[in-house]
Length: 267
View 1 (cartoon, rainbow, N blue to C red):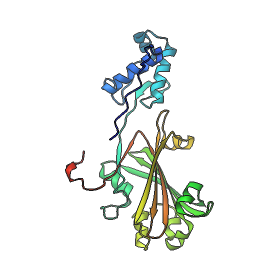
View 2: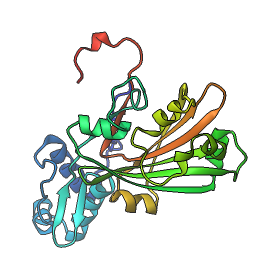
View 3: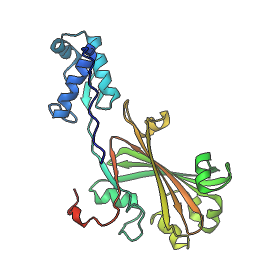
């Protein structure tokens, strides 16, 4: 099991710069709960007096915490500790057709968590990107269907999901190319048409957001993206490639593998 790496210490005996001292002290207080999520930090003027430092130095220290995603800044409103209402996604059950669902898996999971789901759609016919075409085993630039979802939980942007289907699949499952949601979920829709997903291959990675992602998901400085790429397979070939981009501060994924009876009740 991986353990959280301790924060970097200054073991060379040198005193860290003053702005780092400001950042380190405030970070400890945030971690301890002195400043809980949603609370405001003291003003730059108050912090200047406390740390006997210039406002520019204090601002630099606060900037470190902004870049780490611990606080946000708003002109005229000061600095606020980020709130993190994390939504937990069980990736093992996400497309299990034996798992009871009311509609697609996203709506079911969010509703079962006592939250309110909302999503917008667009559907396009376009050439498959290189990384997608490789996973779908089609020629680069071959026509594909993109179903793009912009997803919200309680009106907060939570994730985007881009699913590419090879063009040949549309002839057997024409609703894939129609605009709007497929109420029962695309995996179940395909299964009802004899195209059953029998397995999938997941790839997880993380990076900072692109400008478009930052705009769509309304993320500030210091918030990374969690990328989940799932390639689904029928018995003979890949049938879709889904790229889900999550806000790293608001999402957590888990998998259930093997016999978990010793785990007892869910944590």
